[in-house]
Image (tube, rainbow, N blue to C red; front, side, top):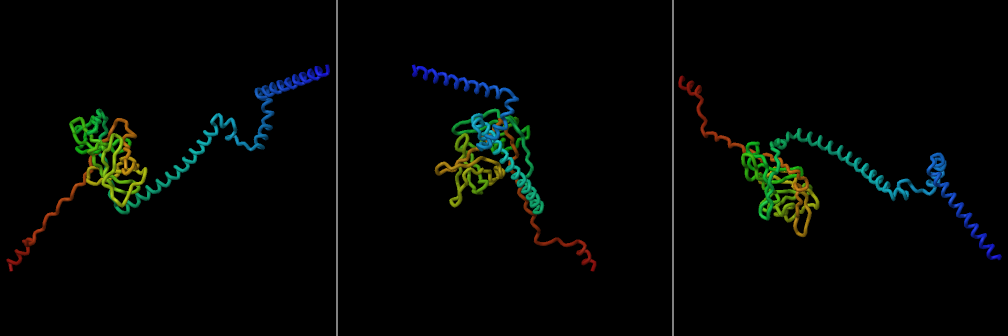
Length: 289
């Protein structure tokens, strides 16, 4: 009898405890849903959060929802914008300084570009020929040997010219030989087409090397291509330096064909005679005497 009485008392206590917990849970739900009651608990929650020392962006809920990652990314972008603003100011200052130096030195700049923009209508890719056909030719102002560019950089050179079309030999063709140089290292070499997206640098000097990831530009040697056109970026693969062509990264189906570089050679000066002709007035005065 005594044991049964104690067990009934324990079960009654459990029921009371369970009832209190249920009532407390209901009270918390009401507190979260009712604005008046929720505002009452805000200072308490804030104080507890401050005492724990957990910032808002590193809270458990912020980590689950991704809010902390977004805020961190925003801070990184703000820092990048500040850095870019400094670089922009430095670039403007350097450009103004270069203009002043060029004016002082009376430096002749590059001649203005004369070009025609055309759409690529046909692409011929194969193991032995990589060319494109553009829908502009001699009647539209394209010149023989014109240089073709797109948004990325150098595309190739016009090898066949018709009245309304032009065939462009791509720099990725294995027959293409492009004098090139490193933008940072200044090392010169000849780029030969390797495949559709790449070229390989040959005839390099033995005492110098390119810098991994630097841009490759046309050097202008030989007079076939102007100097400073973007060709791509260079990486080392084994014993070879491979150029990832920039024209493949930004291709909208259009090319701009500019006039080939042309520097007119000066004409030879006329040879002066060994004996100067006599002055007629002087001859007449001598005869009168």
